[in-house]
Image: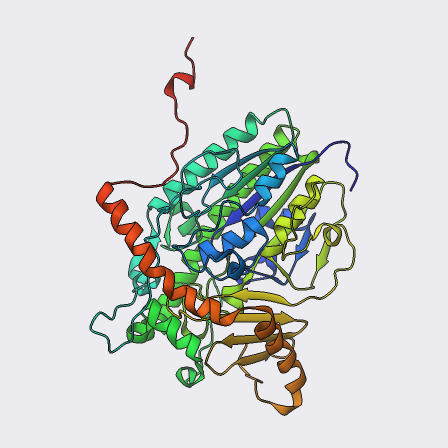
Amino acid sequence: MTPQKQPNILLIMADQMTPFMLDACGGVGARMQHLSALARRSANFTNAYTPSPICVPARSCFMTGLYTSTTGCYDNGDPYHSFIPTFAHYLTNAGYDTALAGKMHFIGADQLHGFRRRLNTDIYPSGFIWSYPLPPEDSPDYRAFDFVPQYLAENIGPGWSKELQYDEDTQFKALEYLRYAPDKPWMLTVSFTNPHPPYKVPRQYWEMYKDADIPLPQIPEDMDAQYSDFDLAMRRWHGLHKRGDEIRDPKNQIAMRRGFAALAHYIDDKIGALLGLLDETGQRDNTIVIVTSDHGEMLGVKGMIQKRSLYEWSARIPLFIDIPGTAPCTVDTPVSLLDVPATLVDMAGAQLAAPMQGRSLLAAAQGADLPQVPIISEYHGEGIMRPSFMVRLGDWKYHYCHGSAPQLFNLAEDPGEWVNRAGDPAVAQIEGELHQIIISGFDLEKIKSEVWDRLALKKVVNDAMAQNGTAWDYKPDADANALFVRS
C-alpha cells in the first residue's frame, strides 16, 4: 500500500456479536444493510476468532497483540501492565491523533492505554470488583450468576436500557469527532456495547423483527450427556444448572434471537451513519475501516447462553477490513482478533519495539496468500478457574481444559461440533500435534496458580477503595465554557 500520506483509520467494534446471526457474514437473523455493503468492498476474514471469549481479556489481546496469558489478564476484573505498548501507543508515536469513543473495559488506573483521549467514559466499572471464583457446589457460600432472566421472553422486547443510552452517547461523540477531524492522520476506535444483552430494543427495531423467521438451534435429547467438564462449569456459572430447561424453551429461544437480531440491526445503522459521514466529509477515500467484535454469543446453541465457551458461536467473530482502492477478497484462513494490533501498526508504517504474538493481516487484506498458523483462544477465569484453551488449525479444532478430557472436532465435516474425535486412533497424530501446541507453548501451572492467588490481593484493594470512596473511572473533559456559542 503506497498512499500519498498515512491513511486515517476507523475501527468499529460491537460487543458479543456472533457472525452466525449476521447476513453480512452469511448467517441468518440480523439484516445488516450497511455492514453487507462494507463487506462487498472489504477483505472478509470468514474464520476469525476471539483470543478469549470474555470482554476484558479479549480486549487486552485486541489492544496489545499478546495472549491473555502473556498479559496476565484472565477475567473481567484484571488489568494489564501500562508498560505493555498497545496499538494506540504505536499509532500515537507514528503521528496519529488517537481517540476512543465507547467501551474498552480497561481495568485499573490506566484508562487510556495509549489513546490521546477518550470521548466518553466507559460503561462498566474500572476496579477489580468483577473478579471472583465459583466455590464448590456443596460449599455453604456457593453461588452462581443467574444470567437466565436476560434470555427469557418476558424480559425481552421493546424498551430502553442503560446500554442503549451508552451507545447513543458513543455514537454522538464519534460523529462529532469525525465532523471536526484533526488536520493530521487520525485513528478513531468506536466501540458499542450492543448487541450484548439485555435485549431491550428500541421499538422501531423490535417491530422489524417481531415476526422474523429466524432458525432455532437443534438440541438433541441426550444433550446433557454430551457436556464436557468445561461446559458443565460454564452452565453452573450462567445459572443453567438449575434453569437450563427455560433456555431450551422455543418461546425463549425465539425471543432471545429476535432481540439479538434487532439490536444488531440497531448497531448496523450506527455503522451506516459513521460511514455516511466519512462520505459526506470527503474522508472515505483515505480512511481504512475495520469492523469486528470482541467475542460471540451462544444464543441457545447446545442449550447454552452468553460467551465464556470455546464453541464456535462464542469464539467466532466478524472481521472486515476495507482499504480504499483495494479489491475486495475473501480470506478463509483462520485468523484472530489478536492479529489486529500488528495490522494497525503495519498500516501506520510504524515499527514494533517488541514482537507481538499476533501477525499483520495487511498483505492478506490486499489479496496475498495467508499461511496457516495455529489460532488459539484461552479462557481461565470465572467459573472454571483453571487453564483452558482452544486451538484451530486447518479444519481441526481442539478444546483443552486442564485436568479434564479433551474435545477434538473436524469443522469441515462437523461444523456443529457434535462428534468428539478425541481419543480416536485414526486422528491421533493431529490430536497430539494440537495438544503439544498448548502444553509446550503455555505455562499451565503458572496460569493455574495465578487465577487463584491474585483474588485475595484484589480483595484488599477493592475493600480499601470502597472505604476511601475512590475509583479509577475515566472522567472526560466536559468544560462547559468551551462548548457551543460562548462569545
